[in-house]
Image (cartoon, rainbow, N blue to C red):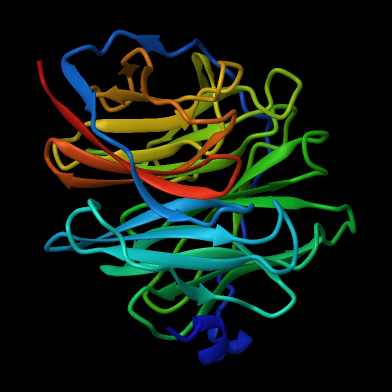
Amino acid sequence: MTALGASIGLVAGDCIRRARVEHYNDAIEIGTYIAYTDTSLVVTPGTPVTVYAKGAPYVAFTSLENCGAGVIRCYWRDGAAHVEPTGKIQRAQSEDYGATWGAPSDIVDTPGVDDRDPFIGTVGGVSTLFWVRYLSEAVLQVFAVPTGGGAIWNVFGYPCASGTPKVTSLGGAADDGDVIASYGGTYGSEGWMVTRVGWTENYWNPPATLGEDVYRIFEPRIVRIPGGDLLVVARTGITGGAIGELLQMRSDDDGATWGSGQLFPDFHGTAPALLRMSTGTLVVVSNKVYVGGRPIYLSYSTTDGATWSTPVFIVNPTDSDSGYCGIIEIDSTHILISYYCVSGTTISVLPVTIESA
């Protein structure tokens, strides 16, 4: 497959109409801890399946796409190290609900640029790949392209006006095309901001930023829950390090304002994956850092995020590192989770059943 970044010209700047910019830089308030009281469902993990065993670092940052009729695609970033200019986006395809996988193909590979943090969202009913072009800590851009091929959109980008080095992590997209991302200061040392970008019929609104504070909120995920509220779950550095307890935030006015953040007690993880199932059940999956082997845990809510179940262990890696999960629904009781493991050399998926007790 020809890499999209090489085959499709970038959309010219005059196609991206800058309508308005809103900044919400008030410090995010942290409210009460989330209550672990939702226990009405049974979580049963299946057997992990290897998608791609590269045998050398570094493959990570996974996302999944459900194409229907049993066809599943898994996307990830492949490079020689965690951050370096050979990074590219690859994907593999399964035609049997993730039981077996074909060979990987290069999807986006910009010469001399680290293409990273792939995420599958929906824009105008079209399955869309979002990713970050990481030119440097001070220059980064978020792009989007239909997974079936088409024009590439420059969703938003920086260089940072202040000249201060910035880093980013792409978060995800709600069902109507709202994108959540993050950017902030030098990794692990400065405040972070959550960035939201809205899609209209033919252009992207500029970013609206939230939360310039001490908590270093990044790697956020966003969904729209029944009733229309937006819900975000994100990684934090609230403990003063790079990995703190997961954070939840809610907006009832389409992202114009946000309520106080709530923390998941003792659920320290990276890049939480967030899913709203067709039943309305919300699912969060992340590696549980500071637990031996960084096992992957799952928590769910049947109360629109008001309460969550106690995080339960679903997969233990074969070495000391795993995570950066993707997640999709297969049907009303089955989900599929993707993740990297074995020191960044392997991409795997895990089927999980979530059903009534």
